[in-house]
Image 1 (cartoon, helix red, strand yellow):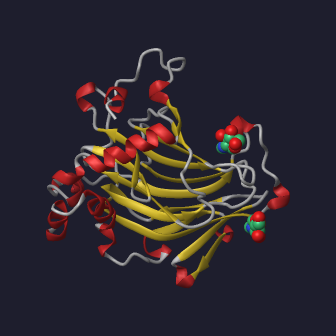
Image 2 (cartoon, helix red, strand yellow):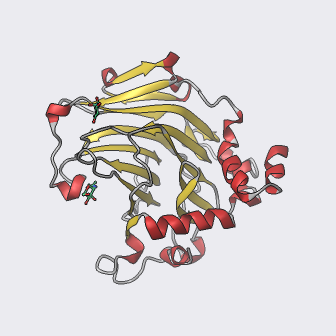
Image 3 (cartoon, protein in one colour):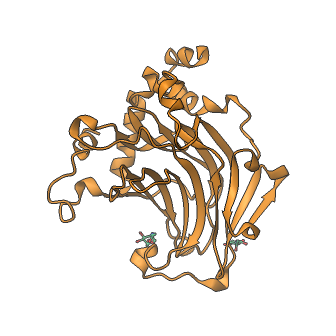
Length: 293
Ligand SMILES: *[C@@H]1O[C@H](CO)[C@@H](O)[C@H](O)[C@H]1NC(C)=O
Ligand SMILES: *[C@@H]1O[C@H](CO)[C@@H](O)[C@H](O)[C@H]1NC(C)=O
């Protein structure tokens, strides 16, 4: 905690990177199997570097995926991913948090592949109490297939922030005052998967997966988790008082982070449900906060 308070006094830029490295005070290169396990098609996951690095394979028979062993209520979660290179059209690589019940909560990153040389789309979504339909889509300012980049979620009582490296690309504020549900009591597991979605992913399903290019490979490392672990029926996390993620500096973005978010809005955003009047003649309530960005 001393370290966290200290960061307040340093520059915003340093602060932004400190925020994201708060958790990595623990070892950054945690082996995959410490906190995660395969979900299906175990033979389509390959392990490297003492299990600190893995690859997911997609071929015409199956994709694959993995999930956290634990359930978490609030915290900071990230992984470094190198997306499927070259012709990845039709493939989707996802990294998301989800609770496992009917009126579920979910926080989604979905990376939609493309033909060689064409840009990936990063689609994000937030489900609260079973309600989603809150898509935002951006292009990335780098080629996500050339190197590892860090994708992370900060989730606390005040906001859900999506980060790409240290850039906040989306904020979902707690708008309970506007009668919008916010995830605060259902623990979530962390998931990732690589699968074929050529019925919708690339240009609305126009581009099909080219199976002659299979297997498609996405690589992962730095499986970082710093959250409150809870069993699904346990109220532990709610009653333990404030955790680091609820401290003042995480309740809102700082000025520099807002500047970066605006930059993403202006230069990289290609779709925002908040601005889609044909789909939502009446602006969804939480979008009032979104508009202020
Ligand atoms: C991707 O394309 C590059 C050249 O464009 C090639 O060197 C590389 O082997 C290809 N990778 C895969 C996985 O096919
Ligand atoms: C793929 O590239 C095309 C052409 O540049 C672009 O219109 C499209 O948005 C890109 N992404 C996806 C997922 O279709």
